[in-house]
Structures are given as C-alpha cells and as structure tokens.
Image (cartoon, rainbow, N blue to C red; front, side):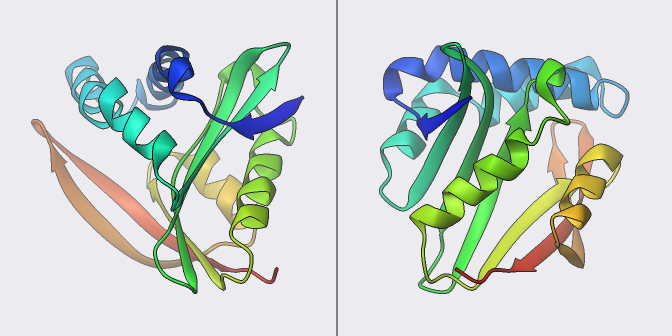
Length: 162
C-alpha cells in the first residue's frame, strides 16, 4: 500500500472511485437521481483538479499496485483547524486500516493544527462508527438541500496532537 498526493492526471480515476463508493454507501439512503446529482456536482473533474493543486489542501491517495483504492481531502482552515471533506475507501478495501493511514498522513502534512472537523451523513452508520472509533465527537447536525433531497449530516470534531 502506497499513500501519495494526487496528481491532476489521475482525476478521472479519482472520480470513478468517488462514484463507486457513493453508490455503494448511499444507494439505500438516496435515490439514484440524487446520487447522480451529488457525484456530478461535488466531483466535477475541474473542481477536483483545483483541490489537487491547492496548497492548503492535502488530497491523498491510497494505491494498491497503482490502483487507487482510497482517498482523502483535508483543508487547512487556519493555523489551528482542519476540515476533512472526503474520506472514501473502495468497498473491496474497507476495514483494512486504509482510512486510518490516510488520516495520519494528512495530519503529518498539517503539523501544529489542533482540531480536525468532519461532516458525515447521519444514516451512514459505517462512517459514523468509524469516526467515533477514531476519536471524533459529535458537535452538531446540519441539513443541506441537494436536488430534491435533503442531506442530513452529523458534524464531528477531533482534538489532534501532532
């Protein structure tokens, strides 16, 4: 397993992983149209490239034999706080410690920050459970309108010491 920064040339493979994991994770929560809307809006190749090139974003990839099997995006919001916008692991590679390794690598990049914030869909019980095991605590909830559906998220935060 290799963890490295994403390159803009990998954007189509990244989008493919995001779409596959979204369908696997949310097919029982959201309609196919909502999943299509979200993945087409939030995972546009041009937006992903901007994130890959942003010096305040760590866009990391986990690769197994040159195949992307997981990814993370973490943004430095200020000197103390980070926000994790994405952590997705291909369904065939979950529960192997890849998510933990991606978080650890992102934290190495942003030394000295004190808090890591995330939002996770409240019905994504695997995700909520994972983050709790990682030491995240719930600090609030949020509702967002996406297409004809509402997305309900749990806001979580973790103190980091690095």
